[in-house]
Image (cartoon, rainbow, N blue to C red; front, top):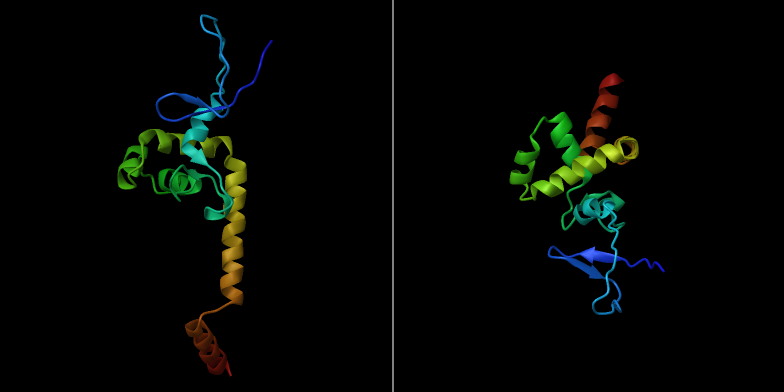
Length: 139
């Protein structure tokens, strides 16, 4: 008989979500979901950065790491050092980015378009004054 038990790695070992009823001197086979290694470093919460995948325990999004690494050409080691992150979490962020690149890039593009439209439709007081001056100068 097989039974699926979920557990969390707490930094030292696996901690099952519910207590295990194991018999002494009996052998047990354990299968580990390797995606859990990445999920230990990457979390997604609707309350943090609008549900963007982030490095666990921080508000640093996977896309932030990808931009620093791919566009700004910063090394992963420098990113880890500059933001006080473990090197494993930074590598996990890049792995997560490549595994989900299309979705992350799409959301980033949509976010930029939304921000530009919002900024255009909701100008600051200074922007309103500048627009008025431009309109007056054109007349």
